[in-house]
Image (cartoon, rainbow, N blue to C red; front, side, top):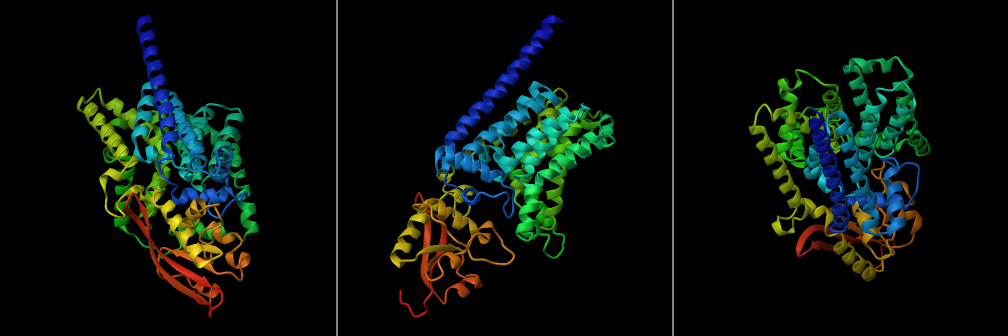
Length: 494
């Protein structure tokens, strides 16, 4: 027995150290890889936020702006400065999954959950990008770990910590509130945990989390509640109701794409195989509770609205743990499952490696998923040339991401404007406009579409088309833009 115990401890130590190595090496790789791609539109948009410090913004809390501001303070207004804390937080998410996995199941399960997360395209590619999901998944993961500790405590401290971590997630993305539903669902399902509904513990956690919404409420009072209309539009809830099964099938297909098809099918297999649930364990129930509410919410919304596949990212914190645990349980029963799981991991790793560098594939225009991180530097160079040629004092873009990317890549990183509409579609519309800053000057308009919004006609009596330009990367056309000169004096000649 002592020898078996020592062997088990050594094996656990091996799995734990191996998982730490995977997390450490992955963090180092993503720090190096983070400068390989240009900024994507979302990152540039949040970088603009960091240059306008505030307690809240139109569609999100201030957490991501604070992190970018800290990163650029350390490393300058560079791609690495923008993305530095994204990579660090992604490594922190891996550590939280590791610690949660060993508490819920074992070091072996935790290791395979880390390996799975490392090869999942959604996590592997997203770990290098400073997006909202990278930030709020970090706080989601640590809140999940804190709750598992708190559920066995009568003291309020662990519950306050859990609520604070959820609250920090709310400062990143309002969807973090769904984790409170996950905790409530687990307490309802787990008989010993139901007692917390009769104690102050659960309600103190809830109140602590909601306190972090105070900046959002204050900011919206000051700005006449623009966030509510934005959230309704974002979720498609401002459109006529309708059921579209095809949208839901697209959603499931997209999930299979970002998770890897065989891993996604393996997770579905876990949920729909009753034999694996005949002796339910609290740990398995908890990981299911972390997965189902968020995934289920977006699945329901998908019948009405086409969302983005990355919106479910936090659900897969529980998903990878449940997948690893249940498939390891399946291997002793069915030897074929070992080879199937290895094949699924290898396929996901190949898919991820392909997505990390796609130029060699020579994919057609608009088919390459990394094109959204290419071409902005070339676009900025051409826009700079046209601004000098026309003498325009400022630049207007018809989309906030185009404006943000131009602001980052143009020399001197100038302020770029967008047309103002009601209700506002992005944060840039709430800042001082080009009409306020340059009331008598001409502006260069960079547009994705030939048809301009009506508000531009109200600002410029004369708008002259300058033709099209192509944003190019490595000889490939990434996107085409329309250029216009907006003139304040209608009788002026260009």
